[in-house]
Length: 179
Image (cartoon, rainbow, N blue to C red; front, side, top):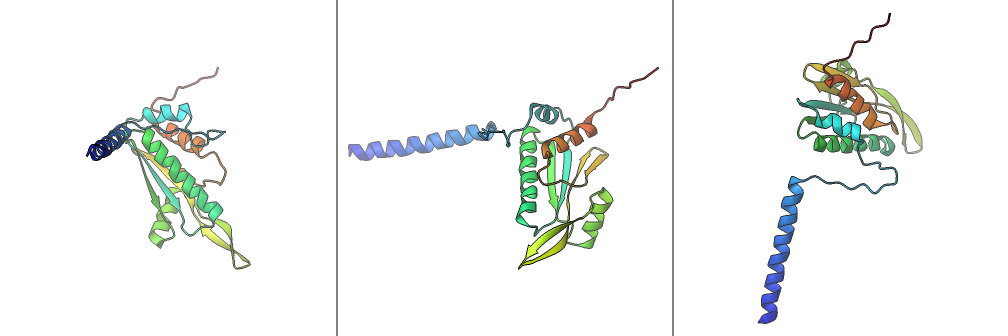
């Protein structure tokens, strides 16, 4: 009888602790990065840019599907970066991934936005073929748009995206005059 009561108490306390941890973790965002080069941490400058956003920034990422694994990793890393940006921007960063090769209309929209296709080598059954691929994004803030035409594998994605957002969101550019 005594052990059964202890078991019930232990189960109830365990469930209560799990619920409490879940509620706290929902309200506070914390991520620890133990990699040597802090690969999964945003710089303080990027965090400042994201926290200072007054209006929503929309990032439309144009990535083709069925890409080779080394190129697909770029898509995955960019998506992870956008998730991280969204967490720090307090709802002021919205992103969407579009496959421009799904139909001709979407492909034309991507090209009009400034995202051009590139040719990549794809190895299939001891053959090397070339495939058209889209690896770019369009950042929009209010009525301003800026294209990142090509996100190169291994490139500094955080710097590119943060500088594009900063360029769009700056309101007053200082004027420098030379005499």
